[in-house]
Length: 120
Image (tube, rainbow, N blue to C red; front, side):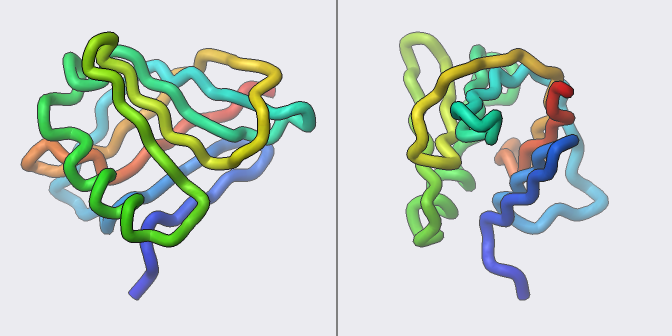
């Protein structure tokens, strides 16, 4: 059984799987603001208006998995601005770019994953 979260990225896309995804789960199109370091490596994902779009309980699964993963991931949520940030690396951001992304959501509203094509 794989250990979660699973992070995959190459020059074309990023995919972060928080928990197993099955055929009953669905996706929501949402804008991601990607942070890049000096070498154009992705270091974070910001999502504005997250709970307004994805629902009140969307972060429940993420918080449990990230807190217990032992990986170099962290997340923050600001309820005043309804903004979420998933930090993938401790590097400093030198560039940001907005892209269309997908949130994978289960039937109770928890986010199970993130997917986005990276800008060229």
